Amino acid sequence: MAIVRDSLFTCRQILNNKASLVSKNRFLGVSVCVPKLVPVSVKVCSHVVQSALQVGLEEKKKVTSLGFDVVTERELKEKGFLGLRKTKLVCTIGPACSSLEDLERLALGGMNVARLNMCHNTREWHRDVIRNIKKLNEEKGFCICLMIDTEGSQMYLVDHGTGSSVKAEDGSVWLFTTEKFEGSRPFTVQAYYQGFSEGINVGDELVIDGGMASFEVIEKVGNDLRCKCTDPGLLLPRAKLSFWRNGKLVEKNFELPTLSTKDWADIDFGISEGVDFIAVSFVNDANDIKLLKNYLSTKSADYIKVLAKVESVESLKNLEEIVEASDGIMVARGDLGVQIPLEQIPTVQEVITRVCRQLNKPVIVASQLLESMVEYPTPTRAEVADVSEAVRQYADALMLSGESAIGSFGDKALSVLRMVSTRLELWSREENRQILLSQPQLGVSLPDRIAEQICNCSVEMANNLGVDAIFVYTRYGNMASLLSRNRPNPPIFAFTDRSCTRKTLTLQWGVNPFLVELSEDMEDNILKTFDLVKSRGMVKEGDVVLVVSDVIPTTGAHSVFQSIKVKVIV
Ligand SMILES: Nc1ncnc2c1ncn2[C@@H]1O[C@H](COP(=O)(O)OP(=O)(O)OP(=O)(O)O)[C@@H](O)[C@H]1O
Ligand SMILES: CC(=O)C(=O)O
Ligand SMILES: [K+]
Ligand SMILES: [Mg+2]
Image: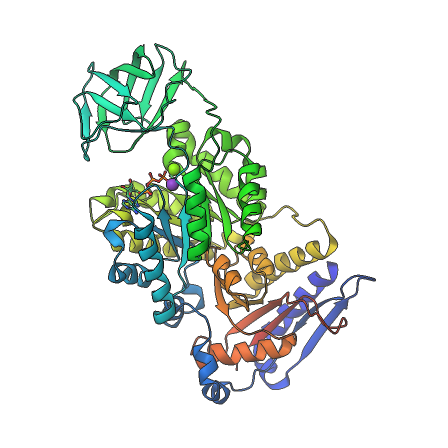
């Protein structure tokens, strides 16, 4: 890799003299050949790109078929490369935002992924949302991915049946029962799961929603629990419950599978509707994820990416193996805050986001980011600080829950996420904090290590040179995500010929995926895509682009395997 480093310096010298590049079309290159392995070439070169306008017009038909998100395109034209938002945005779709018009507003507001929580509503309802989103993607040029989120076995849910909040007064006595009845009864709360009170003793503490209200268990009546309110507060519909003994969570092994029969039916529904991500609730260990991934393979649906929701003490114990097994993680702070003390959430979030970046898996920070906006049109200062913190931690994506699903100000909440993340990203760049990021080695095989090193060096080079964008040519998205892992200053434009790669990359920090036709002639790919982006006014004269490729040719073993180039647009 010393060779790569040497070429970095050569490259810097070249760019110090941009003007001469335009006239001379110079080339500097170094090749590294690994005997009996794929030939590897690391070259740093400058090219004069021929005027693309004419070509662009001639290829009008192809140009319009360039799969690129209209929102990113608009943002790029308005704000330039460095103004592009890096942090991706997920919106939970609920009754407040499910019409075609609502969805289009969210799409225009920067929603990258639509999340459907299978806990709520009917499959028919979800199907309509999915079809509306696909319609918007096809007809209006958005690139919104679809995620279903499994219900799981709701062992911890209770409901008092009134549909609104009920106050629990200090000293009042309540019955937590598994009996099913319509409507509500005074001082009675229904538990969703029959075995909810197994292993619970008189004297244990019952906590609602991580501290909304607390009770002491004063009597066991069969499966039911009679409890006295010790810390008054509100009982909301579908409240989450946990039990504590001597200040510690009572961990219970219900021996229920992570994926219930209903979840499997929802997964089949997701496959048949062609969703892009399945988020698995209450993952315990890596096996939960492996099971689903195997199932998706047998259904020839392994293009669907599996996200593990970290929302239990059990999943924290097995964090690394879960991250390794999955295609991404959601820090599901709602349930997590029921299972661990609230003051631990910030550090746990920081650890999870760091592990994810190190293992190169995208991470979504979810729940209560802008909770007050479910009711109010502005966020609290503390919520803005929380969003900023997640962005500072380089989370790949931020998620809205009730803010978009049931709130009256979903669009505003989305714009708060957009503006706060853009602002903090700009500040980080100005401070050049990314330079401090160091990554442990991921790859084991030589080709993997080479790919990783190329990406690490490319990002260092891109930051140091102050290039405007990184272009990466990638079939499976590997190099694009290795670049993203380094959180570069310039945006990453990933050109892929696989539509599922484009969707997967949509969730990744700083990656703007294009769907294009790629040939094995890399030089041709580069020229063609440069022409395309130029003809759409997305790049302009003088822009400097660092080009990385990992499209592996099936023929011509002597051709370039992976390379870095720097190009100046003329
Ligand atoms: N499809 C839907 N239909 C009706 N209400 C919905 C729907 N999706 C979400 N909601 C409402 O929005 C609120 C927040 O949504 P969300 O799905 O994020 O809940 P959650 O409890 O955080 O998720 P989870 O159950 O996965 O822990 C829910 O309490 C629910 O009232
Ligand atoms: C999103 C979710 O499931 C949670 O926060 O619990
Ligand atoms: K869920
Ligand atoms: Mg949850």
